[in-house]
Image 1 (tube, rainbow, N blue to C red):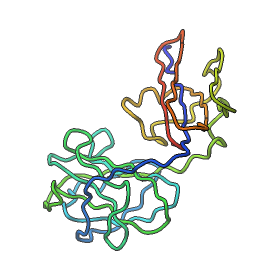
Image 2: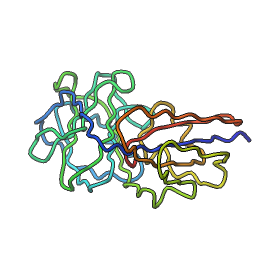
Image 3: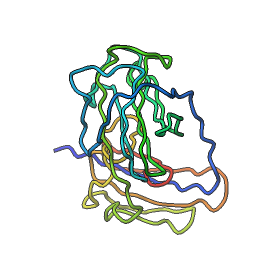
Image 4: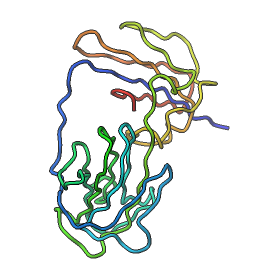
Length: 226
């Protein structure tokens, strides 16, 4: 049997990063309440209307997913937008997407402050539509770094660093497509993983090189705990 191996690096950066935000939609008309769970749910066979929002309760540290993509159970034939607003209708940082899977939208938003929020759906650009599509949604809990990242976790004391020979076998599959935001194909999140956590002491370029005798390797870099 062919195994999928993955190597994951997490990067904690001391300097601040500029957060680029797109123009989110706000306001909208109340359309009810949803309760995200660990499994994908949908708004049902009746299409959700563009220009409406659903309220939901969010816990700090949890990541909430909203999708019109068919791979997640959503659907739409329109150019959709998804925006996360607070319960007063104002936009929330990081809570917006337009055109993720084709012209359909997908949002993975991590809650900073617990409270009641709104997921607002629109027809591009911030418009209304009687039958926009079927919205899928779920959440994933926060990971503890490195507490629940498995036996393959190494805290790098300083850079430069060389791991030496190693294997992912027996390290466990701790980072998966359900608890991290994948960059590209999620297949590499399906195997056992090793994690190196490091904090650069100075600003500069960090080069990461992997030499492997195996196949199906994924090398991923994350800021913070994914």
